[in-house]
Image 1: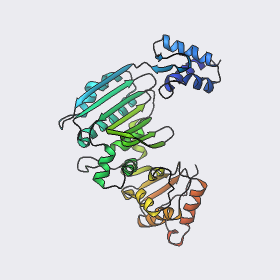
Image 2: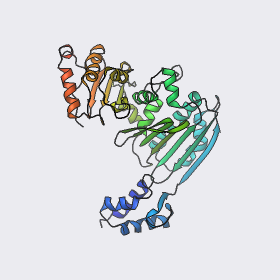
Image 3: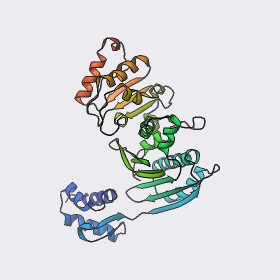
Image 4: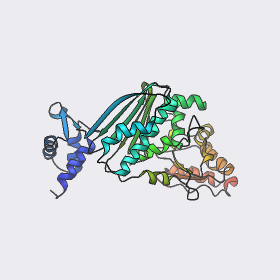
Length: 354
């Protein structure tokens, strides 16, 4: 066995237990090419060290990481509630040994999400939880108000609450523009390793490592539950996330990354101009837009024409950058770009492959 493999196996177990509490032993055995018995020796070591616990017997056993710190509290939500004080008095002391860059991300995400509860949720209470383990920091903010997706749908008069998720993913969305810039959820979702919102019938999640987006229908849930997860060993900084979407000229929030798959309802194909127009809402507020076609295998001619000819022609200062495109999507974009009225448009980059 390589010199550092035991430490790698134990770190892998700690990192993967939350996602696979029953199957982590088999998963680790396959990952490192060792027997289940070899992995179980590391599991017993972690149990004896007090780093994990278990429930059940033999193959039905479920493992759980023992938190280094755990906080759970219910607070009254009033207009005078100050999110920075809640952070400083209740959550920050639990993260004394954590890297400053990770603490800064946790502070940004928590205070932004609690401020949203105060200003938008119409909830009279909120539940806050933090769990810090060697593998991850998990922060949760739950309210019992109107629900974020329903609130955005009603305020912006959207046809479907799923449209609210697409708008949140774009950024610069707020139901109260006098007091908010609409940047909090956008940047928080990209700072953490995993970010999710459960509200009403919809569950929306973003995974930073693979830049995966998930949208699912769930049983109705009152209010809004936001969960944020990050590794305490993460080297990511809040500033580098801000910089990724900032203009080199004025450092403003002028770039965005839009997962095109969120413009779909279920498994439908993106073929119509109305679907394209839904995708294009508020695009004119940005200078550069990366259109990520991951998970979209095909688009129709009308959809492509509306995005890459009509919009591009009407908004010459907005640069469109299609990425993760299938062969069919690239051909449809190329066909649109070759049309007579779009040949002089220099604001659409050649699409890149998946």
